[in-house]
Length: 529
Image 1 (cartoon, rainbow, N blue to C red):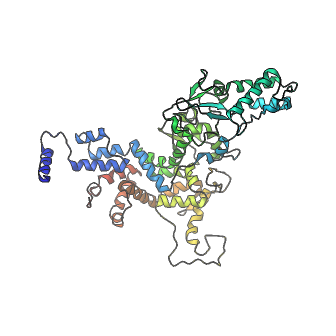
Image 2: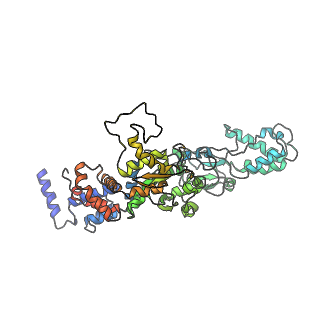
Image 3: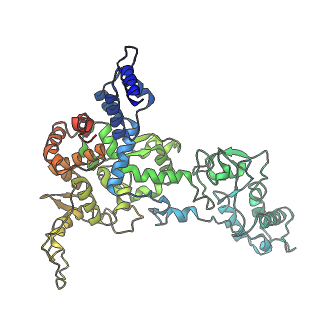
């Protein structure tokens, strides 16, 4: 039976009625190229084009190596290579002015501090101050309206721990104070305070409406821009319902001026931003390749790559963070992704920072990954030179040597004689904790590497990329990406010089090297396959 099937299958392949222009071996090679470059099988349309002879293996490699799937896949490869394991928590980043984390900013209770039970004790100064506080943004709370309808976002004017019943009692007390001039204790409110009770009355009357109220407006707030993600029971629900007075106080239908402490663990926008923040170095690298830019730009460019979602998050929080950046700002802050934000925009945008930036080396993610100036220099050395600092096998530590200069201390000097001058390039990034991205701009960041000196990360990146070691490591990383494994010693001896030559002779265009790798017979028809 097997013989018969094989003969029938062979006859099918050679039949003149067979419309396929490529044989199964070539199709297998095409699928391997696609899996290696994008992590995905060929799309139906590309497979059909290939089988009909409309596209060659070389053309396929050219298309795939600049495809969006390649950009994502190559970025993920370098994200792992750099050592990222899980997305960051952006709520832990520090505000540049107050040093306050976004976690505490989002948990901030606005000063709506009325306690209507003591209405008769509030004097005019106290009420005037609180009325002013309640005239703008306030804390938002989610009100569950049941599984069948959208949840409602209301102003949280209750005391901490109060139930909706207690809040209702409080609202009635404020209404009575405003309309009747009498507090819940039966005593009159103080002289000169009636105008302030009336000023806050609309909040207590209109900021928490019944779930079926006709006045409610459907919106998507800034922290949940596409659909409701508070709970699985809201699956498929696209919008929240909001009283008009909440929209008025919060600056518009996305509620840009307000926060909610009841939802910060369900914040879809920040969850996505956390991943985009982690992927930023990888996106710089993968776009450099896909756009045929010199690979040296990964450590030298003032540009970065941000998603539209990243830009939407920075629209609200960038002004609190950019003062921490090198130069205290970014040149591209007027880009539409910051000023006309669309949190559902998952496309990539090239954004100019400023001349103090150096590709991957000055991204927030690189700072968060490598707390400490030595760690930054060492991570660059390991990732982009494929090297590690080592000590001779016969070297022994000397416990009695307490020389504070690590470049001279026994045992330590083997690494630090090179590492310390490298670390000086990062002197303007202080030890602030790995949850911060802060650049002081005050320290002397003159560093030395490979016998050359310069100031700051930009100089360090420029020095790194001019060495042949950078080119060789870049080829090794590309080989590992394409083949799913590191180069063997034999491959390094036979293939590495050839690929390095291709890279250097093509203005450090790594995409040309990658296309050469997938065209190599050893890739398409390996001996063990």
